[in-house]
Each structure stands twice: as structure tokens, then as C-alpha cells.
Amino acid sequence: GDGFVQAGEACDDGNKNQLDDCLNTCVKASCGDGFKAPAEACDDGNQDSFDACTSQCKVNVCGDGFVLAGIEACDDGNADDTDSCTAKCKLPTCGDGIVQKGEQCDDGNTSNADACLSTCVKASCGDGVVNTPDGASETCDDGNKSNNDACTNSCQIAQCGDGYLQAG
Image (tube, rainbow, N blue to C red):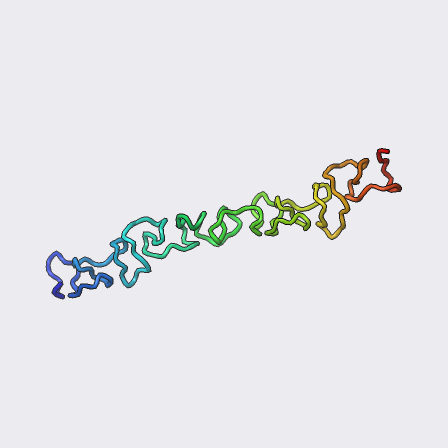
């Protein structure tokens, strides 16, 4: 602490400031020593990269490749939304607005009245849901392929004159 580097000292800046490049013990500040040096964004004194401060003394943020426990569900270190972890560090799910492997569509809502069902399958006549996937109007959709019930295969209400024999 006298300001002169003596034998056994790595540094000696002559002050009692633990937040500069030389600690009071005359050791050069380094990542993981528990003291935030000028070149460090943080230093929590451990080598755990899964808490708020990584082992490289950087603040743990989404996209750095380290999962921040309790905050991030995943962190693969990239901005690709179509892999196993989204750019927002969330696990991909049907309804997140991102078409993932195994999904036909994903419009980010739970409405079944549009072109994409809440199951991330493209709406179509015969899916059991009355919707308008291609701008065509479905008046019914019973989810089966029978033309001899109340709803035809073209998702129209069966009526006299439609060419299909109805019971009764």
C-alpha cells in the first residue's frame, strides 16, 4: 500500500480503492475476485455463469448463451427463432407466432375462426371447426367425410336439392 511494487506484489497503487486495477492486497484485479474492476461489467466473486453475472464478468442477458436461472427458459446464444430456443430466451410453443418444426402455421392467437387453428394446423374444411381459411365461407364443419348428414363434405349445411340423400 505504499505505492511501490515490492517483492511478492503484483501491483501497488498506494490506495485503498478495491474497485480499481490493483486490490488492497497488491494483487491485480481479475474477474471472479468479487471486486468490480473498471473493465468489468460485474463481478460477483464466483465462476457461476447462470446467475446475474457470468464467469466472464459480464451481465447475464438473453442471447449470451447462459441461462439466467428463474428468468430465462433457455439461451442458445443466437437470434434464430426457429430452433429449440427463441431469440427472447423462451421455449418455442404453438401460439407464440413463430412457425416451428412440426407446425403447419402459427399466427400467435388462439382463434380457430381464422386460417390457423390454435393447434398450429392450417384450417380446412373437415377439421371440425367452422372457419374461413381461404376466404370461402363454411356454414358448418362436423369434422367427418359424410355427405349424408346435416353438413356436407364442402362444409355447407345439407339441404334439399344439394344432390345428397339425407336421412328422413
